[in-house]
Structures are given as structure tokens and as C-alpha cells.
Image (cartoon, rainbow, N blue to C red; front, side, top):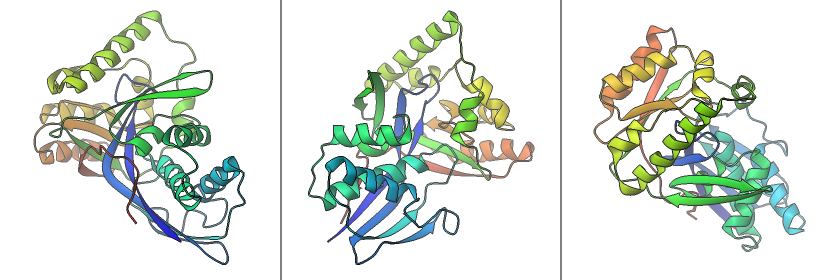
Amino acid sequence: MSVTVQIPATTANIGPGFDVFGMALAHYNYLEATFAEEDSMIIHGEGAGELPSTKENLIMRSIQATYDLAGVNRPSLSLRAENNVPLSRGMGSSSAAIVGGIIAANVLMGFPFDYDAMLQLAAKIEGHPDNVAPALLGGFICIASNEDKFYTEKLIAPTNLKAVVAIPQYKLSTNKARAILPKDISMKDAVFNIGHASLLAVALAKGDLELFGNMLQDKLHQQYRFTLIPGAEDVVAAANKAGALGCVISGSGPTMIAFTDKGGQDIGQAMTDAFAANNIQASYLILDTDSQGATIIA
């Protein structure tokens, strides 16, 4: 038996929604898992020759965790990963690995888990749900937790909303990006983010992209993470000048993401030019949003 899973890239936070917003993007990793006589793994694309191809690989660890949760002995598997999501760039590469592994294992076991169970497991492995939720479910996801259980609500973004991602050619670990954040914030900044995050979600649900763009403001994390991304503020200014609805850090960075309802070439070029002016080499992609999430394609 064999299964192939397509898993989207994701962006998290989206300005004011720190740890509570995530969105799936139409840029995909693929995982093929097949019963075999012994474990093996081949990695193509991002991370080839860099990521482990043993049981320490995050995909394999996620598969193992899924079998363990089901109380089933894991069979030997042959895995083939085609990675297109850049590693450690704020586009959900680890979440794609986790979600791909969980879904592949779930299929091979005959679907013992529903999507909620898979989400809870994925969030436990990742440590936070803002990337794994959209990778699993697609769309724009709002997330909250009560006593270690995560709750989600999915919105479908307007079809004319495009994401322009400017991807620097260096990595930034999520742990480093989290370590720089303050432990306490002011009531004023908290209220600012609550208001902006609430209106951002409402704007997206109503299809009001002008309001959506106006709400891409944050006072909890971006100002601190800008110090880890040379030229980030220049990239934001350049994207906005080129006509973007708004521009923010994608996840924990260093990728910057701008949104537009028009062609994004001018925005992408302006963003990479701003990075270049700060001695950072970057490339850009213009991506649709993904509404389906991880998909079993074979």
C-alpha cells in the first residue's frame, strides 16, 4: 500500500494575530509513503543532503507519533519527500513535515483519527498550532486554546487575494525569533492588537481587502523581530509604496509577506530590491491562498 500527500506552505501571525492566525499558501511539499521491508527515506529539493533521512527526521517522528497514539506497531516504510517549502524561513516547513507524516500514517492505518485529533497531535509535536492548523485544514485559520485543547475556525480568503513572499537566502530559527520577544507587554499594546486582529478577521470574512490591509499592524512581536531581519522595515515601506495592501513578517521570518489584489510583480521586485539595498539576497514568489490544506492525491 502507498499514499501520496500534498501539503501547503503556510504563513502565521499575519501582523496582529500573534500565535492565533495562520494561512495556507499554494506552494507545496509532497510526501509518498509505502510499506516496505525496511525503513528508507529519500529527500528531494529543500533540505536534500542536509536533513536526516533516518528515524530522527521530523516526518518519520510524526509518523511514529501517530502510530503510537493509535497503539499500533509501525511497519517499515519507504518515504520519498519532495520539499519545495524553504527551510527555516517562516513559511511552515516543519509544519508541512509534521502534517504530511501524520496524514500519511493515518491513511496507512485506515483513518483511525479525525481532523481534530490530527490537529491536536500536530500542535503537540510542533509546540504551537498557528502553522500546523492551516497546513492541515487550509484557508485562513483563527486559533484559540483552553486547557491544552486547540479550537479553530476556518475562513476562505477572497480568490483575488495574492501573497507576495520575499524569501531571504538565510535561515532564522523560530526559537531565536521567539527568544527576542519581551515577557510582558503593556495593556495599551494588547488592546491595539486585539482590535486589529478582530477587524482583520472580520474584513477577510466580508471580503473587504482595503480594511484587511489597514489592519496589518502589530505591536507585540514585529518591532522586536525586525532587528533579526536586516532591511525588514525598508521592505515593508517598499512593498506599500509599490501598491501592496500591507506587508508583514511571515511567521517568525526572515521571509516578508505582502498582500495584494492585483499583479504582484512590482511589489515582489520592490521587496527584493529593498533587501538587496541592505546586502541581503532574496527571491520572491507570487502565491494564491490555499483553501483545502493537506490533500491525499494518490
